[in-house]
Length: 290
Image 1 (cartoon, rainbow, N blue to C red):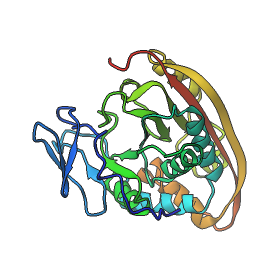
Image 2 (tube, rainbow, N blue to C red):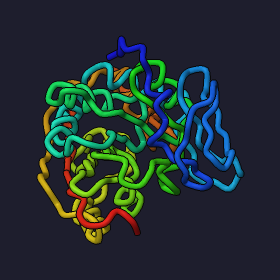
Image 3 (cartoon, rainbow, N blue to C red):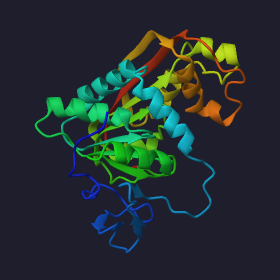
């Protein structure tokens, strides 16, 4: 879905924090800066680049090819029920104050769905920011959703938001740094996580020897979040899809298997496959500072 909005949230950067000193950011033309004079570019596509460029990062974002494959797969509608479930969980848990943030926002599809759902239930939807390590993802999502804000950032190191700035944080198939999620969420806010179960795409993974999905993800995540969060509603969204050959290739090309061997022998006919994703909501408790 393409947004028709034109007001843009890049101009409203007051909830973003400087990755160097953590002071609030303000916009000045095509750059944002803090009171300590640290300055960062706003790209022509409309996203803000808050990476430090110190060369020390070992994590890498998705390539332009991976982003294009993901956009094509999502646009085909295969994950619409998952997207709807994530949006519903956000709408049920957002306290009505604070921004909406997505970690690993990719093409912006989940952020778009959640923001639209909140717009239906609130008099004015909150500011929305998507964070991704990939410049290609930020560029694509900023062009597709001009009324949402997108930032290039390494969220596993630091989420560039002010303390307690968010009412909801989303992480769909993306990193969930527990302490940072707790810091940026206001008490009463929520973290919504979505992750594959071992049954997810199991036929495709078995047939082409793709990366496996481990057991016990919900239990492990709950334990990591325990110091700051209490568990809320959890559901597993599971259904069958008829996967066209071209979309099977996109599915592999958009994820971690793209960095391995991909499909040695691409499929030539439509196949049945299972989508199986857990969507879990966690409630932020207690003080916001570590």
